Amino acid sequence: MDNISVWSLVLICLLACCLIMAAAWVWSYKIKNASVVDMFWSFNFPVIAIILFFFAPGWETRLIMIAAMVTIAGGRLGTHLGKRILSHLDEEEGRYQELRRSWAPNSERAFFFFFQAQALSNVLLAIPFFAIAMNTEVGVSPFEWIGLSIWFISVIGEATADRQLARFKKDPANKGKVCDTGLWYYSRHPNYFFQWTMWMAYFIFALGSPYGWIGFISPAIILHLILNVTGIPATEEQSLRSKGDAFREYQRTTSAFVPWFKK
Figure (cartoon, rainbow, N blue to C red):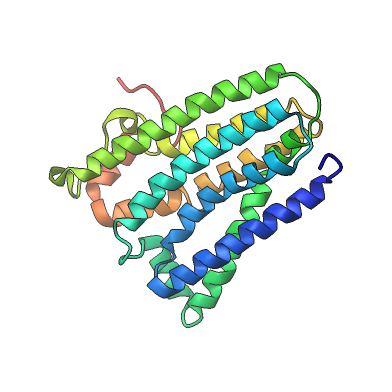
């Protein structure tokens, strides 16, 4: 399908993500737990990458590279979130409980549109993938090698942070305590930091393709969400409610986002 347009690919991906999120909403409605949206949001990126691999006209090696990168990263994060969510499926996570209360009595209808908005965000954030997938030039550019290198470091960093936090929470002796070991000793949110650098890696990778510079939208949106919306603010509010003074002390002595070396 070498003659397929980028807009046709966008529409196909949007339709796929919307259908997946509609099915996810039906499930969340039945179990009264909207937390499941997080893992489906993560899994939608591999769905987009696979669609582009099969239908986009780009150079095959480049398509394999970006499809592998997105599938590995999105699949890992989705699986990690899925394990956490499925372990307490009968208990909706705090931020979604707050949304349910604020949207009452029409919370389920509001959640349907919320899930669809997440599908739209999947496609918007995938802008670098579309630019990369349309590039028919043969050969890997320096931007692509740099992007791949940063992506590799980011995946390892995010996976390490997630594993350290999961191990800390699994120990009953740590109940009510703040995780301040490993990467969490240097940053309160190393997982968010490496998630953002991963999107920077996709953007840098896209710079090797025509119109790839438009991909800056993705790390910019991710950074805004992390710093101002659903990332750090919501997470720290919950931690302050559950851990109180212990978390306030942790806030005082650590960086909120970028890891730094403490003495």
